[in-house]
Length: 290
Image (cartoon, rainbow, N blue to C red; front, side, top):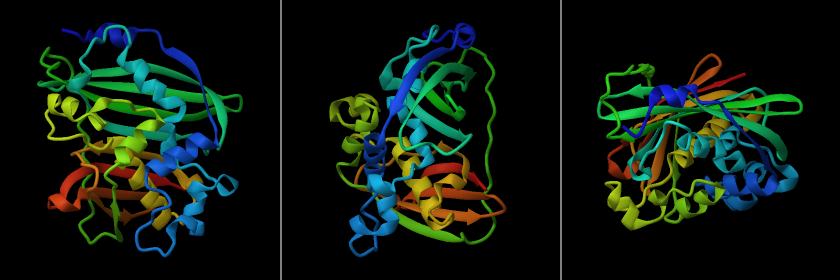
């Protein structure tokens, strides 16, 4: 079996210095569709959008942690000892980011990555790749990526947790629609996820898709931006943690329907693809905030 769970989990953490500046943050926000807010007159110059697109007013959406340093934590995890897998068999199953303080517009940090767990889901293995970033002032964020590797389960190992987050039994407090663009995956991948699944039609077919799909982390970032803008008054510093399960795919050009239920220090979210009869995109999604 290409995955040796015991060897992968026991391997020494890998550390690397990462850095980013306002250009990386701007590119990430543009990859999420910032500056093209639907329903607004002249969205590119709207003050609420300029917080994401103009360096003199810039704040950092916390999901940027998933791509800071070109996402080297996930890359390092997939090449860890005990792991030898085919990239075409890999799908991003879920993502959690915990913020220890707001992400600075420019920074330099040490990112330490390791395989925190390997679970046996029968027809697939799940790798939990954990990255922790700290700078000279202390911890910045902890990021957990749950990576499905198709065809690598069935060795009789621990199935791992199966957390499901039931949605409130009432109408959502807010529902918004966010269109994606046909070229959005091509722009988003410049932030560091070069998986050809999101650009190359032939590779997408090898992975079982009719055409390239949008990055799950792009939908993830777009959803957090909607929650921050609609529920949190545009204040990114209020976000404490953000988790989701990738329940389905998005093809570039489709529209995300984002439903939000606000509670005490938390916002539950469900995301679907409008054009495919509200096919699930993100599930078990929770933003915890101050």
